[in-house]
Length: 383
Image (tube, rainbow, N blue to C red; front, side, top):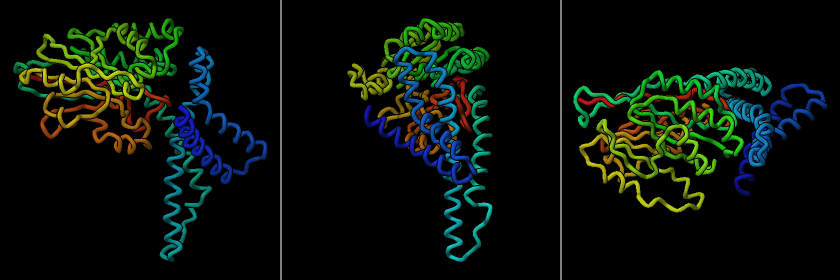
């Protein structure tokens, strides 16, 4: 925990210091305004930690009061910093070109102008990111297979990374539920991180029960199934599982079920148990996959988009999430570096396919930029 705090405060605090210095050098501020700006930057650096402390202390209203400005500010600062870094990199290149005598340094790349332009673009992008996060898209994927009767179709609707918690409540879940219901799923699946944060007793009794009821009301004749994500462990596994079951989902924890529609569905626990020092599952992923007859269509639910070499060819379709496709455009490269398959549908070398959802909700900032929330409709069609 100490290492995490040091890393967080160093990175996030350094980001605020960079923004503060650029703003101070650009705008002619009164000394009092400069002091207020510095104080605000310091408070916003610490605000996410204060939110977590308030949550743990059962001060939900205080946490909510601080969380909205703190996390919206966080998203805006991420975008603003990314733009400043991009402009400063361009300015450095222009300076080198000018130093070599190849071209004059353009006045438009002055520190003041680029800071003003970055701030203007960041404000527009942040406003749009708040809007985008509240409007999930229905992405459609069609999978053909010879393992189902010709002409038959099973519709699977996937939600992932909803992150129900302090900032994600009824108004935002409503859009996801409406998109799921409109798709008329045969199967509804959640591929982890359905909940977020620590679920206090007050949380569970109040709005959490209403959110669970909204999900439980969705009709899926073939069943509703879920697996754990890393945030189920962070929220408190027992409480997270209780909420998931109240929401109508059958939790698949390293187990397989044979469904009446000709599909075998397998769910894998997220590997977060390792970081928390919890015991490993008794049944491994490899054992589960090999136990399913090859002639049956095999649907695999797994939070992280990882396909070990021994798993490829042992399932037909894996549904995953976790990456959010970066959630905000500046983080897109980071998710790509961590997970080579970080969004969309891909085919593995031995024929297994994987679809990685961008996620249906948000984590941290209630914002999305160029990575809209997703409710995935997968039609598995027999040929």
